[in-house]
Length: 328
Image 1: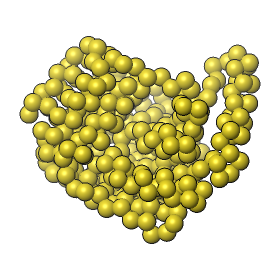
Image 2 (image 1 turned 60 degrees about the horizontal axis):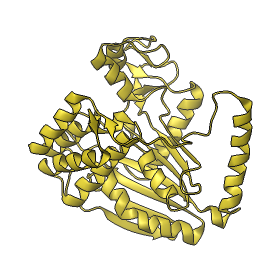
Image 3 (image 1 turned 180 degrees about the vertical axis):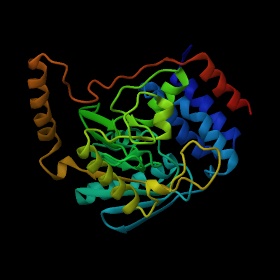
Image 4 (image 1 turned 90 degrees about the vertical axis):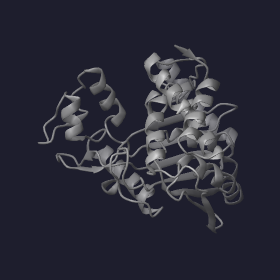
């Protein structure tokens, strides 16, 4: 079924309102859902709407709380989401974070005690749209084992980065530090498909192609010990700098009820004009892009061109579910 991005936003917003979210909060989360669908990030789009609504109804996420924004130092902005959604918390703190980065050349912006932010790149691209380099870090419920281990210790713990360009990002990357996003495992299970070796281990620590065994075991880090080190870095940035919980202390992100997620995100905002200048920065990246283009391989600058689709192809069952949630 072909569905416009504006209709995805409207139905998502109505569903969130119907299950207890406030007007501002619902709009901000619906923006993220629609943007995920527009950029073909299906795991973070309508696929997640049902979970948002269930957890609004159960009270696992507070859909009406107003985030608290503070600026303890000139280059530091903190937003306490107060167990609400990450998207409205980010929106409330972003103006001060942009000001801090432009005043100081660089700033940190942390969102603490939040529901899962889902697509981290949704936030860094907003930073880049204001002419700043945006880097983001967040953690999630433990699902990744240490190299050679079997016990889940870290979340998929993604990193996102967006470099501003001339009207569109000069680079955009959003990736988990695990070998794969957890959603790809759950989608494979739902479809009755196997998964590639190298994504996960079973409960005994053995590599597996069975998504059900993977979900009972653990994911592995991307690039082995290197990805594991990046995952640990994210854990410090997301939990350590915000005072939110470790991945170990978050129950499954999609479980209907239980304690709030209480996750954190930290963003770095860098003003190119306070350093070499935006034109120089873009020229250096273009120099690399030119060589890649001449090489004739499959390499490219991540996120360039930024693919956006409207209308979006949405499975009939998923769209029907979203509409039913909006009528609840």
